[in-house]
Image 1 (cartoon, rainbow, N blue to C red):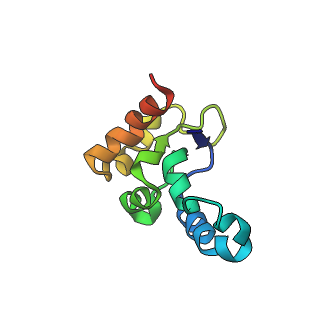
Image 2: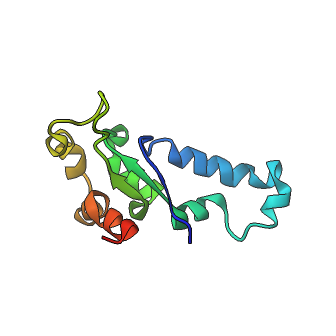
Length: 119
């Protein structure tokens, strides 16, 4: 039931890592392959969240979100870092977020965080 959040790392790297971990688990860690009840990607889906803030998904952010899992992504501004979306985070991502399905927008812009943090 442990939930983890990868912050300040974006989401673009996740599809490759999940694919690689699923592919290499049996070969590189056979003792764990037989002990685990699920694949690494399945553990990610049930126990991990990640944050995005500037990514455009190479022009198809919805596809990237679908690949990672829209229930596992939350929006961040990365404030107060110099590369943050300050001072107008919503204006700065309006085009990217606007390219997402309405239900995806609701989830990544608030519902997922509300559920995770029980607020």
